[in-house]
Amino acid sequence: MRGFRSLAIGAGCLSATLALAQPPSMGQPFDDDDAGCVPDTVEHRKCSEALAKALAGLVVGVARCHDRQAVMVYAGGSFDEETCESKAGLHFEARRDAVAPACSPAQLSLALAEETQLLDPSDPRSLEAHNADAYCDSSSGRPIDPAGEDAGWVPASSDALRCARGVAKNVATLTKAVLRCHGRMAWMFFGGRDFDEEACEDFDPLTGRGARDRYSARADKLIARGGCPPCLDITHQEGLALDTVTNVDADNGRLYPCP
Image (cartoon, rainbow, N blue to C red):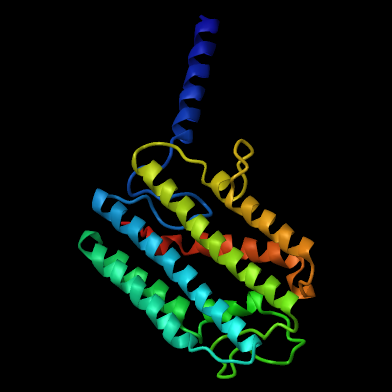
């Protein structure tokens, strides 16, 4: 009898463990470091997926605008970066409007809030403010945008320019990759399947394809080529990666709002 009871208790504990290991279901919060909830309907899932892809396109698009601006200003020319950014914003809005019939009012309003924050130069979390993350070396004494809307400095040398452009591209690529991880997580949880989002973001020892690991590999190559200013040494570049993942995790609730 004692053996049967022990077996029953053990089975109960195992059942409880398995229950706790189940992924969150529709409408439930993701986990402790990813804001937001698993979509509660098929339509809302499709909306969130489309908005996430549109947001990734916006981030990459603005990064390209900043890249062209840096190259032109370094060469002594000028570039209409505001028009370039406006086109990226209009592209995001077109993709948002295309999926709007499947979205809830909260999804649409939060997507607008995210776009507004990313494109508002007065917001410390905007893409304009974060431009100084890559174009951080002030030794040239030349602001990258004399009008002051885009933070950062003109690199002091061609090698420093190459490094800064590489860092900016890596950060935008990491943002896109993390958004993709969140999309896969939402899709898997919606279907009742588990997904290791942390491995997708950081490092999967089985595949070596974690977003952070790919970022680190590209950062190592930039450092190996030389010419990076002190503000873009490997410690600072890895710090940018950590900040990027943290910010995307925190803003996940805007793409996957709780019902």
